[in-house]
Image (cartoon, rainbow, N blue to C red):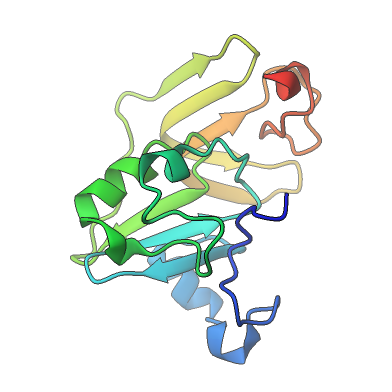
Length: 167
C-alpha cells in the first residue's frame, strides 16, 4: 500500500540521513530496537518498528489526529494528550508501537502474561516478553502477535501468510 507507514518522515532520505541517525547506545537506552523510529512529543515519545507492524490499524482508528498514514511525519504525539496517546499505543497487538513518557516512564507489561488465540489462529501475547526470532534477534516487548499455524515466513511472528491472511 502506498499509504503504509514507513517510519520515515517526508523530506528525509530512506536511510534516515546523517542528521536522523542515532547511535545504537542511544537507541537501546530509550528502549528502541533496530529499525524503530521515534517521534518525540512534549509529554510522550512514540516509537514505531515497521518490521513488526502488521497493519491492525488500531492506532489510526484510535487517534487519527496523531496517527495519519497520509501525512509525514505520520505520528505527531503532540496532537493529543499523552495519556490518550499511551492508551492507543497499548492497543497495538504486535508491539510495533511503543511509548516513553517525558518523565522517563515506559509501558508496564501486563501481569500475569496473557495469551489469546484468535479464531484465525494468531496468538496475541501480552506481558513481560522476550521473543527470540529465527535469526537470533531478541526483542523485549510488552506485546507480540505470534504465529499459531507455523506458516509465517517471519517466525515466530505472524505475518498473516497462513489461515489468518483472509481475515
